[in-house]
Image 1 (cartoon, rainbow, N blue to C red):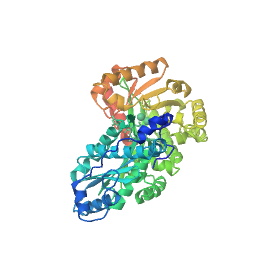
Image 2 (image 1 turned 120 degrees about the vertical axis):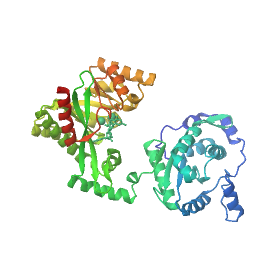
Image 3 (image 1 turned 135 degrees about the horizontal axis):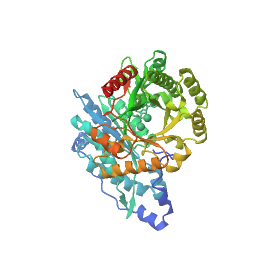
Image 4 (image 1 turned 45 degrees about the vertical axis):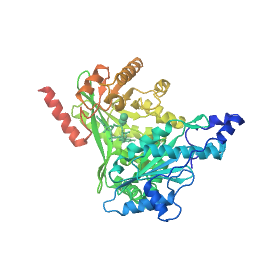
Amino acid sequence: MSSSSDRPRPWRRLTALSPRARRRIHNASVIAPSPSSTLLRQLDVAGHGALIDDLTGLANRRALHRRLEAALAEPDARAALLLLDIDAFKDVNDTLGHDAGDAVLRQVGLRLEHVAIEADLLARVGSDEFAVLLTGSQADDAVAVGRRLRTLLETPLEVAGLGIRLGMNIGIAMAPRHATDATGLARRADVAMHLAKAQRTSIEVYAPERDLHSPTRLTLTADLHAAFADEQLEVHFQPQIDTYTGIVRGAEALVRWRHPQHGLMPPAAFLGLAERAGLMGPLALLVLADAIERCAQWRAAGHMLTVAVNLSVTNLMDPDLPTEVAALLRQSGLEAHHLELEITEDIVMADAVGPIGVLHELKELGVRLSLDDFGTGYSSLTYLKHLAVDALKIDGSFVRDMADSHEDAAIVGSIVALAHALDLTVVAEGVSSQQAYYAVRDAGCDIAQGFELGRPMTAASFGDWLIERAASSAA
Ligand code: C2E
Ligand code: CA
Ligand code: CA
């Protein structure tokens, strides 16, 4: 069931209904149940006990479990289980009464049948929970099917002449990737569904490292502690190029984990883990120390660049951070304005007092601040002033399609105009083609960063790359 802390509840506005309207909903016409699949009917006919959900005519939980066990017992079995939970369904019952709630569930069942035609089985597995089972090659389409289901359920349902819009969270787990038994697969789909709800993403595929109870996650957490001691965390650097001169202006430091078994892991695979394990502080210090030291060395070798380090909200809650950054700068001899700290608009969501106080102290040291992923969050203009940033990084999602999309080009153009009016530097991220480079340059972006200009590299490779580039531009 959904918790009361969910996103804005569509049902709230219905509490204002007149008793007459509620009665109409109460007496809503009942849609006849329609059995889901022939397979299910065969099972039922074969005397396997109660396998049909009376309300919707779909399979019930027991039928799903049996079918799942049978499917997974096949050689080379492949399956995807999608678990769907209706948002704030309790409010429907509380507000409109149980009959209306039942009518809603029947309609949801009908819609699922409509979308998931390729499904092996559709089931109602809890009061407001449904499941879709895809087997064989269909399993590869699980995410696409999930998206279609979500879109379809966004279209308002008609209950007694009222349009009711439902929210829905979908968790997906796949066999054999996530589990090879029915119970394991169901549990993992449930974990993914709760994650979709908690993160408000509405659809998630199971990921062991985000599962609090998965053995992988437990060992990964232990591994992460060891990674600090064993120096498995590495800082890679991605060049940032001045679009007017073509000169390398800076490098963004990006952390990676060289795991002894899993190989080089991207930050997305372990930052969440680090966050929950309380390791974001040590991680930031490690990256800061390395980035500051390398930048000082490159500058000493004649490469006049700056370095940018990503900070999370957690880092900005740490009142000791400014002192630590000051010490690292002092030790390396790097001037503060050659260090840029990248923050995201998330900090506006966090209790603004702590992080913003820390930000101001960092500013006082003389470091530069940039607002990362601009355009994806609040992008509120008032914050730009409030946070005292020096640069904006336009998110790669706008840059990617700029050359083909008038809208994206217009968005980038107006961000540049705004930023320049506020005297901010504009960095375009995710520049992954020549075309994109020309587009951001022509739009007035000051700095470009992306695979087209240089991928993130180890510090050693980045050093070599700087030398080669300097040599070829001198030639
Ligand atoms: P970000 O700060 O937006 O970093 C840019 C990401 O885009 C990097 O991914 C980079 O490899 C990738 N990228 C760069 N150019 C291109 C391109 O042309 N095309 C595409 N598709 N991608 C490009 P990466 O290294 O996987 O980092 C992901 C995110 O992890 C970063 O996004 C940042 O939010 C976070 N992160 C990385 N290092 C750190 C760190 O040391 N501390 C913290 N707190 N977060 C970090
Ligand atoms: Ca960044
Ligand atoms: Ca970014």
